[in-house]
Image (tube, rainbow, N blue to C red):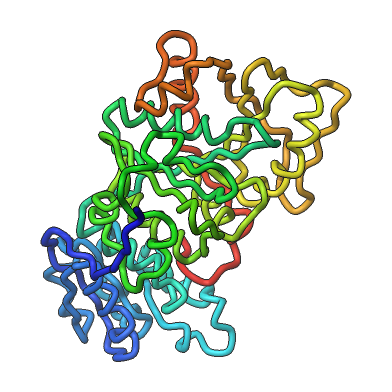
Length: 386
């Protein structure tokens, strides 16, 4: 039975005090609640000289544009997590353009320029990660190139392999048209939060509380749909769940829907890599073109995983990418052979031994390795520039 989630303000381990250097009350009123929500102590100083004693020892330093020239004149040393921060109202006519602040940021050697409230989520995430002294877990995604390609099985196998390898893993199912990833994992009867209960709350979703409330087996935690109440997942709700999962876990695996949704786009954008599952038959490649083109707009690191007896793309099948993206034909990242035992073993939280196990393990490593990011779709959004 699905539980009802009542989101509460996150509580984190005590952290050292960060600095907010500004005489702008509007900026202070925008920043202070975010630090409080993340459980991160924050001290405001009204004069640049008052920041000298804690400039290097504070976990984070946020400087308003009103006092940035004074900080530059004092020649404070370079440091990590130095943010030039303002409000969108301060930017004036064009609230999406923070470029006027970059000359100040460069002189101050700041690593980021943000405008609130457009960058609220980014700053909240930075406060939380700094308070917890953690970096967000990598995200990988799978999607079926065509019906019956087995992307959900692939996602579950990768997540199960990672969990058995000792990593806390969250598997998120965004395809409400399927049978439910928790059923495939043998956890359908286990109580815990499903998507309907994760979309109705208000406030900040605390990372550890999310993992404690999900259906799970060992280190594998499942976020799946409620079959009695199938519905698309709102993008904002997905963002909250993804953020909490990345802070509490070691790996997040997302099973994407073939039909692009707002939440699916957010997941693809956040992922290090998107694996498109393709089964046997030449027409499988043709069927996969639209899916690959749709998600290729949002992630440049997209590749193919061959399922069963699938072969590399036949020479007579064209492969067209999205015109809006810097596109090349996706590489083949691996092959996962068919094994009749696999569904039953996954329901038990196990993976087969031998060639199939090695293929799954190697594929999980390939998908989760760090890659250079290329912002395709969201480069123009107001928020943080990193």
